[in-house]
Length: 102
Image: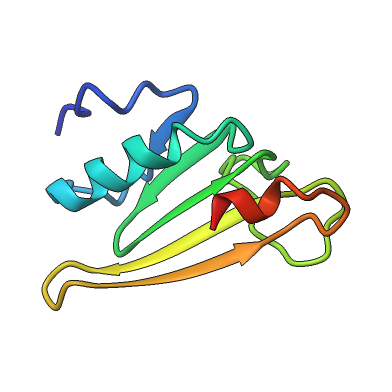
């Protein structure tokens, strides 16, 4: 499958296991891309993660871990069939701009 135009391979990535991208993912990813604190966004089956830091393993996933100093991460669990999105934020407690992400 060819990547959609909004998946640039640098800031916006998709996992190799993603076969088809539901339109709600595109809307969410484009909205997250508007937040300057989030440098990397990745689409997975059933979820989207975004962070200002990439993992150091070969997978290069956005880091969404609570307590990492300097890290701002968001994970969205998406059930497009039932129209449910669960939102998780791992804020950098040292900076007030994290609240704007909410």
